[in-house]
Length: 331
Image (tube, rainbow, N blue to C red; front, side, top):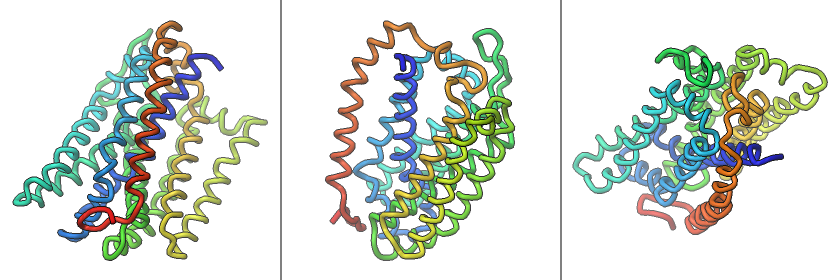
């Protein structure tokens, strides 16, 4: 455990927090056309209104931390993934503007609703494609990106993009199961079943594909005796899946959301198994990509103050708005 490892964990935590916290509100945007115009859509929007913009703080921390703590990785990844990263940022900006203007411009609310959905889908798909492109490998020559402008676009990256759309949509539906009532609650339960099945299929497909992308991935998953530890990940996914379907069948409200988060968490553990300790999978380790030690120490002082502060105000926001929500706000 050294400074570089600590920073790797900080950035991994920021990315995980972003997926957990922003995933469900992006999912609500993906599902938005499935809700009736009027009170249903208003209830869905109100359920995330107090927290959606704060959730994106973690994306800023993850991106900024990568640039500061692992500048070589940042310098290689950015030119390799310009297109999906720019698409993601534009999607997030677009949906943010639509979120605000749908309340302030009722005459064009249908258009803003469409923009909210499109922005959510584009941002989510771009995030999934970015992950897939990183996993499949980036061409490097010396200390620079050596590939083409479209190397990121492959069947595997498209699979991860679609899989993330399914995953976020399930998170969104499970969030609405917990936080809403009435027709929007019923619609969310109707969406959750097929989305849960689709997510399990997507996880299986990505998991089966990943070990064959790189020899290192295969070794990390199947080499003896490490396979005794890595085999626990699919076992836990199976147990969580059974629990998720049971909770949906029993009409539970909170459990499906947390079980879906558990599936995301296990997927991130599987990702860590595949790529650790690389900053760029199969190419550059975290120690090769790291900033000088003095820079890491300087940034760690700031992170030690800011991360607890962000966690505190985020937790407080969720505590204050912990009840059910309707078309006119939280009860």
